[in-house]
Length: 128
Image 1 (cartoon, rainbow, N blue to C red):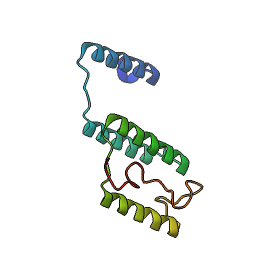
Image 2 (cartoon, one colour; image 1 turned 30 degrees about the horizontal axis):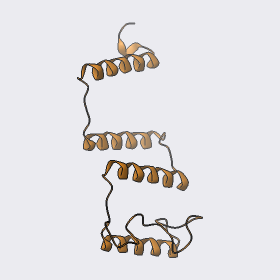
Image 3 (cartoon, rainbow, N blue to C red; image 1 turned 180 degrees about the vertical axis):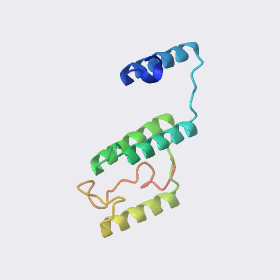
Image 4 (cartoon, rainbow, N blue to C red; image 1 turned 90 degrees about the vertical axis):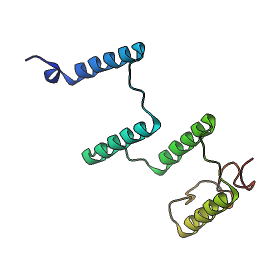
């Protein structure tokens, strides 16, 4: 038996990794646009769910992932800045979900009522 397809999967990954590193060093590696990366991630997530191997986030993990994403977006300068109308609407939806026991902003052991975030600008009435 010869050939890449008949190799041990660990050896295949090792060879593919070496090829990727070499392509980056030469400057010939494909650079994904944010749209391409989003689509690739979506496909991978769908495949993992179909196989039953996708990670299921609990509410605390999801909250932490969202927090990290928000911090990264602010550091990069790509975070959405809410205007006062958007902030008001987000706060209204959060309050409705909180009072009805729904998940968005449901406050299970989080911030005290009346202090449920909204982030920078929400209490200030918009952009700074």
